[in-house]
Length: 278
Image 1 (spheres, rainbow, N blue to C red):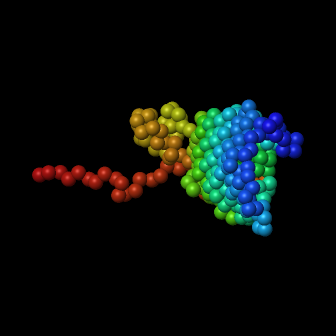
Image 2: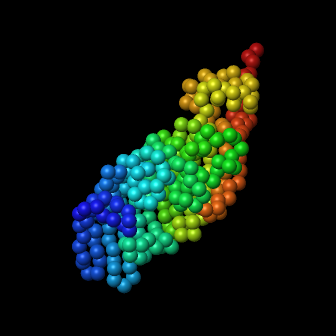
Image 3: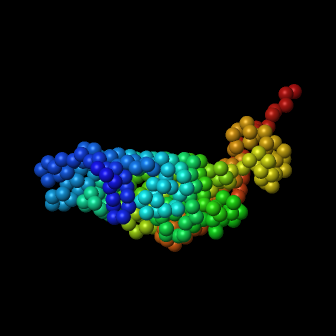
């Protein structure tokens, strides 16, 4: 089939193998390809009585920015490769997701891209993942990180959906050249609300780590460079910012719940005194 259009959006070449059996459409093969990516999947659509849909799919983006542009989200992401794998079902037709009954699993992976600076509410979940609401509330100067949009080396996450509420099975992690981010919690896809815990860790290089450690304890600063190298940047985990993000996607509420601190050493972690022998 020539280019498949959804409205005015050219989505690419569509190959579809389907059969009808006793009031259900079985999608044995769904393949949609364009120069920027492709979608492969299979599913079942029961279209008699109470409609039911189940869809297993894998979406691969060769250029995530261009593929999102095809879907109507132009200028939301620059470059990047991405893969989204899902197993979803809902009560309703294949042509429209019914969020109150949406259930299933999602896995997302992405690399080497950058979120453009989006206005609140634009891009929906993209705005949530790219933390567009946080920069103006950060106490550390992250202007170099967020001014042109968040750059990322990799994004990885496993998500579950139950009755339209999507939850992280484990923290969704974003690794960037200047910052590391972990997000954990849930978002209501129908109401477009969220309840997320977000941890932001600045990426501390060797000299920056020494300086940051010295602010907490000058003695620590003297050994920070060696420790940071040998132990693979442990200081990045000492200096973190924690936020609680609630409210709607369009008007998120961000509360700081933790700041730039180094954890204190517990008494039981201290080395026991050495007993002198007579």
